[in-house]
Image 1 (cartoon, rainbow, N blue to C red):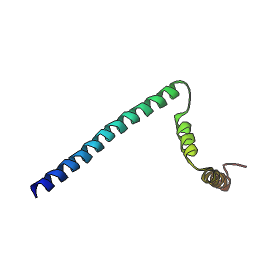
Image 2 (image 1 turned 45 degrees about the vertical axis):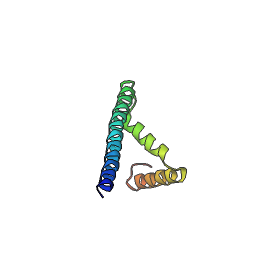
Image 3 (image 1 turned 90 degrees about the horizontal axis):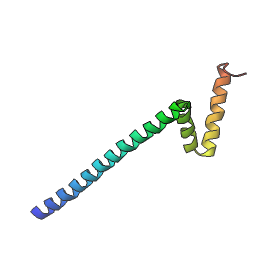
Image 4 (image 1 turned 180 degrees about the horizontal axis):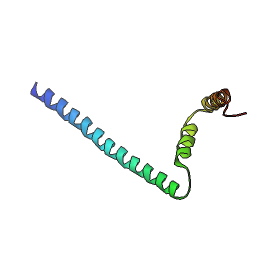
Length: 82
């Protein structure tokens, strides 16, 4: 029975170590993304708008159209557009 516990412990340790490595990679990628945005900002681009464009590009075409339609509707309702 001790073998079963040791095997489970080693398997658990393996999962934990994999997650830890992935977390380190995720942190490195986040730092890389921040650097790209900083570079873009240094070249005169608006990073807030860039983030919005990235969000829109991730959306399906139908969802994006619905989002834009509702945004226009809300802006007209609030008098932000004629």
